[in-house]
Amino acid sequence: MNVLPDRYWQIFDLWKDIDEDLWKNWKWQLRNRINNLQEIEKVFSLNCKQKENFQKVSSIFHFGSTPYYISLIKRPDYRDPIFRQIFPSIEEIDINIQSQGCMDPFNEEVSPVNGITHRYPDRVLFRLTSFCSVYCRHCMRKRNFVYGERAKTKKEIDNMIDYVKNNRSIREVLISGGDPLTLPNKKLDYILKNLQTIEHLDIIRIGSRELVVNPFRFLDEKLLELFDRYDKVWIVTHFNHPDEITQETKTAVKNILSTGTPVLNQTVLLKGINDNPETIEILMRSLLKVKIKPYYLFFCDPTEGVLHFRTEIKKGIEIMEYLRGRLTGLGIPTYAVDLPGGKGKVPLLPDYVLDKNEKTTVFKNYNGEIVKTDIKWG
Image 1 (spheres, rainbow, N blue to C red):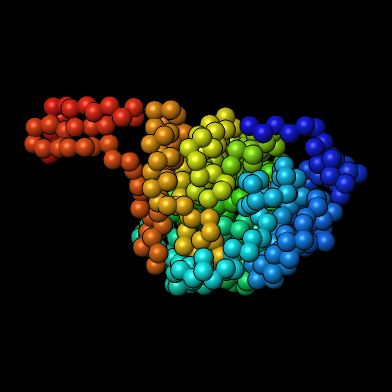
Image 2 (image 1 turned 30 degrees about the horizontal axis):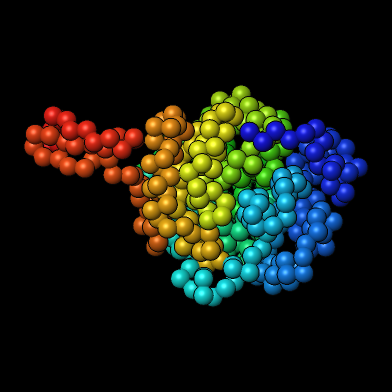
């Protein structure tokens, strides 16, 4: 776990006089987002090429970061995993790299009701806002960068809730965005209260990166009261690198868990950030230390502006092979590909079955040893 020194933010000139209580106020973090080149240069120096590329790319795919998250950058270049996740790269608009991408690769905008994606029979996605505290360069909904920042109206939300009420096959709602936990508590309360009372709904899953980029959101007692009140809620967060896990993370997770709300994590496999076995192993161990359960490791989506982050698909298989036997089963995520066109997620596993027949099955274990057994395959 990346334990930062006390008042670490005060090493940056821009925030050297900021009081600790103010720094840890989640609303202050949102109000003071860094969102242009002039503000970035108050934090650290950039070379001419970085400035030029920033202006070209951010005019299309916007930039934004909380002071907290940008303060985790150790050096302002693309070798730093935090910098690479949030700083615009000329590769995002390189037609030679991005030509095979699509702004909506999973047909999420094909909605039965505005704001809803209904891909699987038993669950639906609510897209409540296009605003995020931090705009990740690898975002699967990068179209939000272009469309602008907007939250759903009460009328739109009511239509979405009514759709769930009228479809008894729906057992789970995934609340996403943008980031839904940037919404005011009053609006969240309205949504959660109405979903909680739907008898056939088992799970309300909130997908949020606030735990990564603005963990002070979970110092808010009113938000924690909502989690405590609505017991169908699960939190799914999105850590990609061990440097994102801090003492602030641990405090925030402890607060969430105190309400009885489980916390899971989805990681995206990203070239130049976490595409090696050692980094993923450290990340999974670090998540477990703060009591976050690794859930998915995703192959990078075919979104326009994101393809430069893609690895070969076999890279994830190699990582999964490496983790098996080195890491407790609690820490091993499901490696999956989300199929284009909204066809759903497909889990991918290393091949541990080498041969099978009516009498025997031949396995390969985590050490690569071949084990022939008298277990019948069928």
